Image (cartoon, rainbow, N blue to C red; front, side):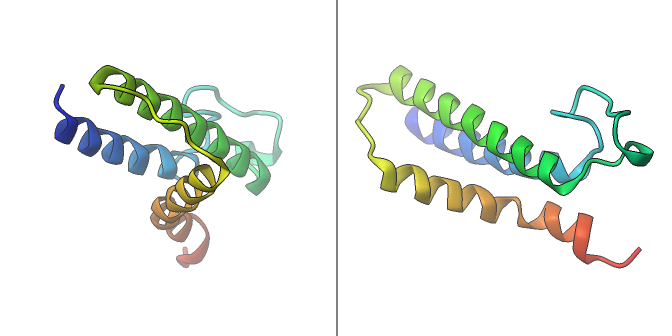
Length: 102
């Protein structure tokens, strides 16, 4: 896989993974939740799930980087910026879930 394809695939997967906690009521899009009232995920579960998907996409990005060439060491600033961009990608799902009137 060339570098350009890897970057676009990672961006596409990040956009899907960032919105996944907000578009379904299952835990990690697989496990049904019956412990909460009405089977609706509370906001804190969605945030924990968002953090999980951030870690998965980050590990996938490291794997792509390793496949393409050398990996570079990153400091905390990189991860904070990447998480901020991941949260921005999650904005459409958040709007649909919490801000649109039903």
